[in-house]
Image (tube, rainbow, N blue to C red):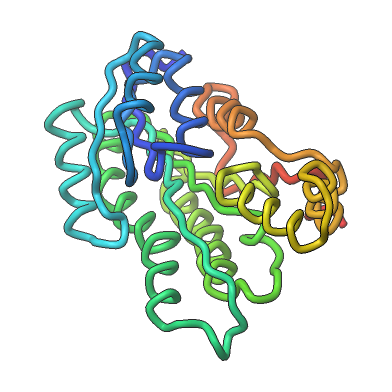
Length: 256
């Protein structure tokens, strides 16, 4: 379905980003990965699907690095057809104790990076006459939790940014939407599960159940593969009139 298209997925060397990259690659899209850490294993995993794969280690908190990333995409892949803004970080603390540098980093990576990638990639999409921009927000882009002021502010901002750009492109062949996952069992969440198990003296499965029971009525984690398939749908012809939506995949979290 996506053969001949190029997808740039930020924060995609593991977790949700890699899951989305793999789903898009299965549909024939060439993939540009981005993120910290070892890139060779995820590159090989994507390449095994028979598509062209590239990698750029841009620091998504730095506008100059983001400009270099888009320039790489233009030079090596002929531009970006599908932009998935997934890069994100988290920090938890009461607002009065929240470190200023952590606030600035979360806003830069979780929100401002999507502005920079979008402003740079959108002109090429409009020129080609086709494009998809998918922003990975969160249930925290729709509702709040305590001690996550920066993350909640950034994700609410990302949902608002999505809606605004979707209106600006509403009469064009470029669609802009957000996906809002609930709990996903990423390595970061697994650390929370392990910490809870140790603190409460329960096994890992019970710790997972307790974590989910607080927010996610399905008592099931959303998987990166499920999020990837939703991204594939948003890239399909069937979704050409889905615009400016914040699509929750959260096991009923925001239905409460």
